[in-house]
Image (cartoon, each protein chain N blue to C red):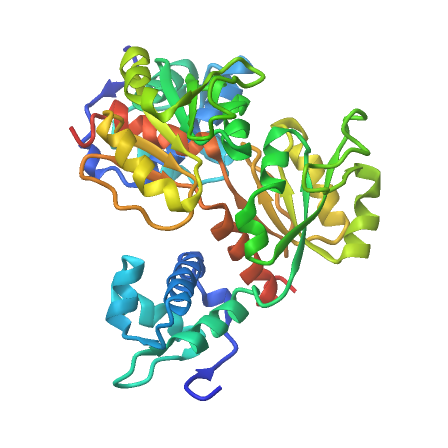
Length: 220
Length: 220
């Protein structure tokens, strides 16, 4: 590590907004790296990300000293650091609970695979789905097989795409099988056990926010 | 309106977090209403939403005086006010750009329909998809037909579910057709014209945030 002093972050102190922005920085760096750009000033990286330089410096400061005076950031090094910080320097096995249309669409979502997230199986309770597989060859398994698949494949992330009424039961089940990180697409609140991280993606909330904007005549 | 003084909000002052919480309050009220509960104290509504009462009072204060001393909130009235504020008291026509797996899954997403959001058409550039329809009978149209569909059906919201490389072009097109509210599933930044509201749903960002949590050993 020639140009950076990396430190172990006190992760409890890292705001959620910062971790989201790290992903945004990484995407800009991936583009710059692909274009063969060796270094980028803090101002240029900020513009590429649509943010200001002060925020970038503050966010990165949680993890170490990455800038070089008069140079800015070395693109390949900072890219590599961010991939490590975000845990993208390894394969992460993912299971999807619910093999309906949403679950199937997520299984096929290319962005996940490009990022090292590998969907290894879907799970469902519908006998007509169990035993089938997606167009990409990902098997649809019975819920009874969840623990075995999690253990055998080293699954670290579960995506919940079941109807709202089944979500809590499914969350409790994946946690009981040892999964500690969950992306939840079911609407409504879930009771989340300590030590488990749940990110909620609530599509209806997003549409309602747009609807509020339209109802209020904002932007007229 | 017997128990509330409703006022027109200065919408620019309403934080995005508040509009999101309005949706959460509405869901709790829908549950209470379905259970036949006529009134709820601010504390009980707060507990139902997993928030504190002070936030609820502050959020609602943007829109009027809804509480009644000694009673709390009248459930049917507050529910109706929130539905109006969020623009859910009417049908909203929605188009989906991109009829791949994600677009098709979104077209079938039941939560949208229950909330008054009606997907009236999908659009694609793939000739093998154009002219077909989803299992629910929603037609897949050519992009050339977008303007006509938007005008005929009074479309107010567009959902972008196309590959990243096509997203900006598609956003510019829907805006040119008069749509001012967009839910975007494509990763990467979009240039958003003034007076247009874009909500980004970035599934990879959410997974990366979980990955960060795991990489940092948070919760161990």
